[in-house]
Image (cartoon, rainbow, N blue to C red; front, side, top):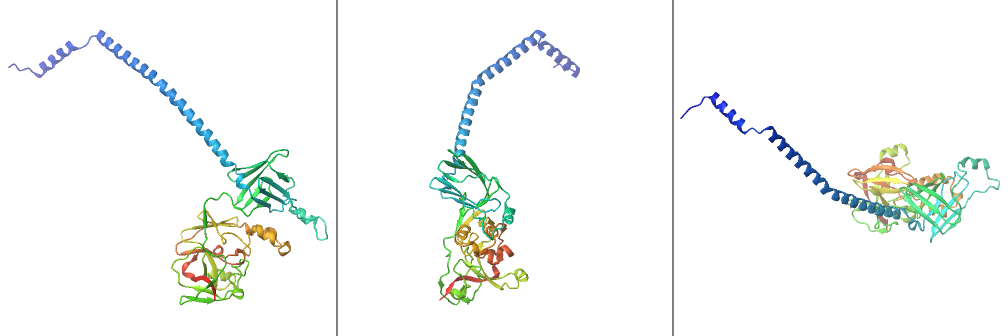
Length: 386
């Protein structure tokens, strides 16, 4: 066998590679074929996808158009709240204009009246004092009875549109659950609540105390404050007798009236406040309590029960002003502000409860001292002694 050196092997390999090396003509021909084939394939691919792309675009346009058309119809349908406002009564509460409007939606008829109570005659009328309150002279409402009207909603704005011979629009902006301000600045209030699908109800707690039995877990107390008065001197012993307090309870429930130690911070401000007090459990541990427009909300849900809103001896705003003579009170606006009071949201921590008296303006409760520690509660009021 002949052995070749490394140099000779390298030389033989180079000679062999030269024999298989393509010529310039072969390179040009191969390059031409490859280029033409790729160009052809690219052209065919574009032509193939054009119909598919066009079809997709057309289909997307049709679906989008149908969606927006349907969504717009649903939006318009949801915005029309005319039927929801039937039976709705709104009364002007501000004295910043020389009007006293009432707006009433009754059986398909819109009734707008100006029942201005001010008298410009008599010895006691003070024209200068009256004029000081007037800041709005150009009111937008037109009194009358209208059959052709509609009410549309846009967030917290409600627009009343009257059609026919007398055409006009008037927008009420909701600033609280029962309080509205017209586009001209006039303030209104109502006793009804709109747009609250989520509510918390209490159908168990009785509005009036009944007689209750006594046992080894109860004791009797005398109570003389009217902070829990709902128009019948409720809880007052001089009218109904002693109250029964039970110490037999494991867990407090919403609506229960409790007998508890008043926080020292309140007594320090007012020495006349008794050390032992009565209030009602409204907020439970872990909940958030808020008052908006005189209405209590629990975790953003309206508390729909007799102790869930501001009252005076059990009467709401509309009932109060319709039944109580004006000679009884002096500050009408102040009373209306009470009925529409606000309180920022308060979180009820563990082992505490949020307490409210039934007659908010005549007592002390968690609005003053915050959530009450459960350990300060001596018992629950079960009723009146036999």
